[in-house]
Image 1: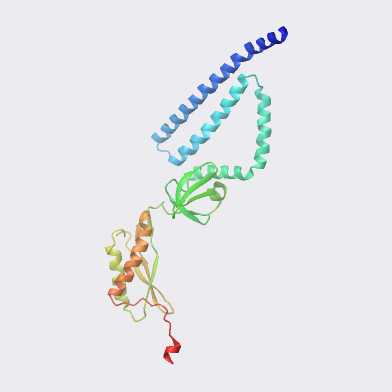
Image 2 (image 1 turned 90 degrees about the horizontal axis):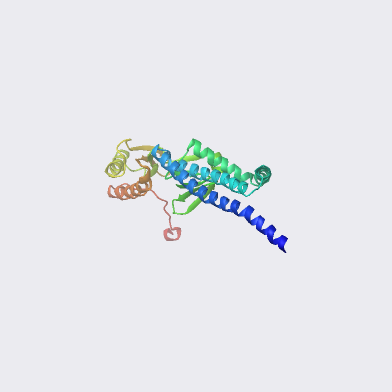
Length: 268
């Protein structure tokens, strides 16, 4: 019993200082990591680094520092870091083989950070989805859809597919097709449609809007109506100009053709 107590005392006196030291290293290390991350964010913000890149680099630096801190803490407890490093390497290989898709998404995230095809707040079309970029994470990118739904796309497929960024230029052209009857006066129709564009508050003066004859269709003369607007006003201009075109053409006595049904029984 005495030997057991003595052995226990020796173990306590041997490991308690190591445990206390390891805890202190852990607490101080986490505190320093927080300071380093906050300082790096302030530095990047001061230098005008893109907010998306700031978040990505902050997460990456945070994980690297925490892994190094973990290795330091366990080495303080007497665990051989060389053997531990070998275990981590083996585990990393196994995890890497099991998570090839996730690693591809990670690589895609890095490519997005480097080439910056879009940034937070941009209106983007990719992988058959359209939405505003909400957040770019290490493995996925989150979008807010036009109907306010959240869209999450893996960075791997996102970086390897076609990306249409509607916000890069700041302006967009609205492409409308308005059809009128063959009996309508072409010059008068163009005048009515152009006046709608000139009077609309959200249609830009430069580039100038355009109204041209697009095609002579089977039952209508189709006009290409092309106003320009700021990206955020696209749908306002699209819907409002379409509505105004119907109202103003009706006022001018210009018919918009539509299919007519004839009741044969009534004719007989």
